[in-house]
Amino acid sequence: MFTAFSTALSALNADTTAIAVVGNNLANLNTVGFKDSEVSFYDLVTQSLGAGLGATQVGFGVGTPNTIMEFSQGAIESTGSPLDAAIQGNGFFVVQSPSGQTEYTRGGSFQVNAAGDLTMPTGELVQGWNQIGNTLNTNAPVANIVVPQGSLQAPVATTSASVSLNLNAAATATQSFSTAMTVYDSLGDSHVVTFNFTPSGTANQWNYTMSFPNGDLTAPGTPTTGTLTFDSSGNLITPASTDPQPVLTATGLSDGAADMNITWNLYNAAGPLITQFAQPSATSALTQNGAAAANLTSVGIGDGGQIVAQYSNGEQVTVGQMAMANISNPDSLIPSGDNTYDLGPNTATPALGLPGSGGRGLVLGGSIEASTVDIATEFTNLIVYQRSYEANARMVTTVDQLSQDTIALKQT
Figure (cartoon, rainbow, N blue to C red):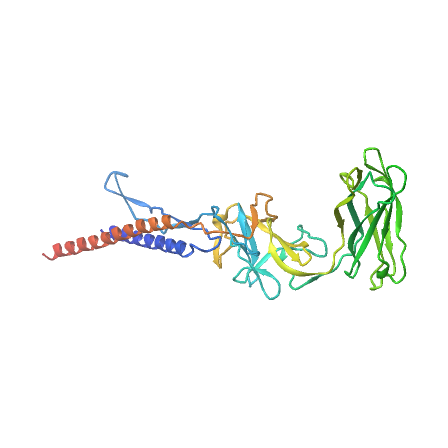
């Protein structure tokens, strides 16, 4: 009879634990990246009663249930927030707690602290690689990701330019054509370079002049001149792609910037950029590799976990890369609060690397991974555990009544 008491009490304890797990799942219904836990029950050893071995066996109840985290994929929800990121597939973001402990998380809501570090809302520092100079070395050890704040991007002097255009094959010697391009010096000041084209009087041949504005120089400059020759199909043949390309030199800039040498590229990988067809002379594209100084306007997490800085001149620069850890047995992780996990004694060594490699999932910027808790399933479980608790509580009262009856028999 006393075995019945302990058996029922073991069930009450197990049901209490199971209800607590359901309560925790429901409490984290809206927690970003949360993985729900399932309860696994197991019975205790049985005892044999009577003379026959194993003829009558009575169990000792149920043990304390195990909880198993289900690392299934949560729904990906677009938020539009530039610092949100979701993992699609396997893997974890790597973070460092305020105490210096390395932890792992699927929560993708990030922010920037006063020091410019990328952090979780609870203060954990996101780990990855920072761009140093123009180099982003993802083979180096991970470190705190530092986001540039209020930084000014240095200007880039123009050293290369190209013009895509057509020169009218039917043009007469007096029908010249010109186009202009804005370039930048080492201080970020802009200058307008003019390209002028005039038929030479020889079939399929044009003279060109590439000039820098004299008003931007301390002394008049020397234009770059030359001749363009086309074949009978209107394709540029001279200068050839293997010949030295024209270079415009500007010395003594009045703003004090460094002298400029701008190479005019007449070809790209697809062929010549200038043609001579019987169509009106027209420019289709102008490109150059310089830029003025620009202010940082925003920072966001792009697809692939790249930290991308957007500048006022429209340029986007990758300034960092988030690291991702692949853990082969994530169910062995130990929740440590703040939506993070610590390594358990049986957890495999995490493999750090880039998203989308080595079995790691993808990182989607501007999104979060929703909790995997299903409210309908949890309420169903809650009802089952409640009924189990009530049944076993009834078992306790029944055994208690039987005990009272037994005691009463002895007194009569």
